[in-house]
Length: 444
Ligand SMILES: Cc1cc2nc3c(=O)[nH]c(=O)nc-3n(C[C@H](O)[C@H](O)[C@H](O)COP(=O)(O)OP(=O)(O)OC[C@H]3O[C@@H](n4cnc5c(N)ncnc54)[C@H](O)[C@@H]3O)c2cc1C
Image 1 (cartoon, rainbow, N blue to C red):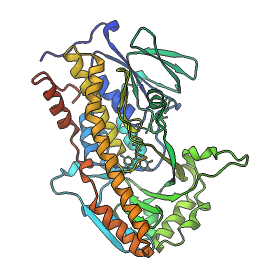
Image 2 (cartoon, rainbow, N blue to C red; image 1 turned 60 degrees about the vertical axis):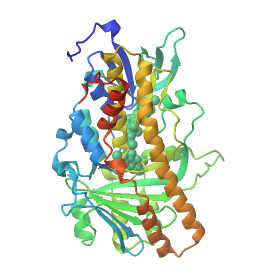
Image 3 (cartoon, rainbow, N blue to C red; image 1 turned 180 degrees about the vertical axis):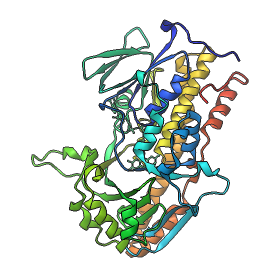
Image 4 (tube, rainbow, N blue to C red; image 1 turned 30 degrees about the vertical axis):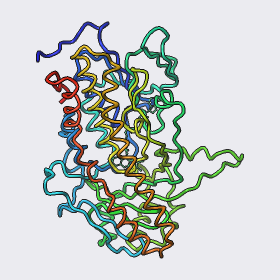
């Protein structure tokens, strides 16, 4: 098939990407490969940045980073992958007893095996591939409207400027304004838990706590309380503590507004005593996290989630990607992969429709048909976990038995397929079924 040349400006597809997280940056890279697309990325923060903490890069994340050309920007010293092939452990947080251990599957290529790194480094690897001249920072989207007598959408920004576009891509995260505009009945809510994330020095951890395992470890307790520890790249070590924190009211009786915090600096020393019941290595690592200061101070993430959306597109002109399309609250440690899968599917469907002279609406319909069933399957996994939880609570087991049973039963329902999902094959199969022989990928 002959390459598509850039059409004159008026016939180009004008796309606005809202949000500069992994999904927005991925979309910027992929749309940039479509010569008939005139895209702009709008980010509300003064610069493209990512709050602290570590992130797992799963096999499917690696594959998509390779497709986008960003994998080469990640230096091996920047991530941690256990040299002995252990991909994760779960321990009883109170006793330290090992309950479960997993290893990388032998059939996963070494360079695609899961690893963990500082989130900002993943963000930077994507940003390196983005045409920055089309990124507008400090641009908070405040209002969206559909233009009468036209399929176009009007965007209003906090600084008073506006834009009119053909396709609105909501990459604006879990609290998406774009999603609220498309589906006003859909609401997310605080799920009663907050995560506290700190990066400390790896060398200090292993000097102070030589018995700390050199792999990702969930130190489980009951009631949703756990501590996650993991070495990262260079001299970084991650400590994440999750705990129930009921919605409190402010002094005036209204909801505690700061509960909507995301990446807010937090003095962890005030919470450290909550972990006194954990085993010694955890208590010690929590102490190090509580002592961290400066750039490494703990950040608080109030966890929000919401029901599955029945559709990830609206009006034939709006598509949701990343956390905007599936408000799952980081449940599977694969949100970056889901975000980049959305990007791949959306841009391939847009390209397929353009090449076949089909409408944007038909492209979005295809995108929806690929992604909505996938998210239905992921929500089913969550429902299965919730059922395990309800049964366990009703059994009123002792603490150690409950922890052990939780790990065993969750493990039986583990859905490893989500980390090895091959979106490129799913998209190719869908598009070739649509119109055999017409599809040629240009984003790859
Ligand atoms: C505790 C926790 C642990 C996690 N662990 C992992 C992990 O190990 N591995 C993994 O892959 N994923 C993990 N995730 C999930 C992952 O962080 C998300 O899925 C991923 O960041 C989603 O990217 P995104 O681009 O869709 O959204 P975000 O990263 O939230 O980016 C949204 C962007 O939109 C901008 N924005 C929002 N509103 C507006 C507006 N009105 N105008 C302009 N800009 C706007 C924001 O400033 C932000 O930059 C975790 C999540 C949580 C909460």
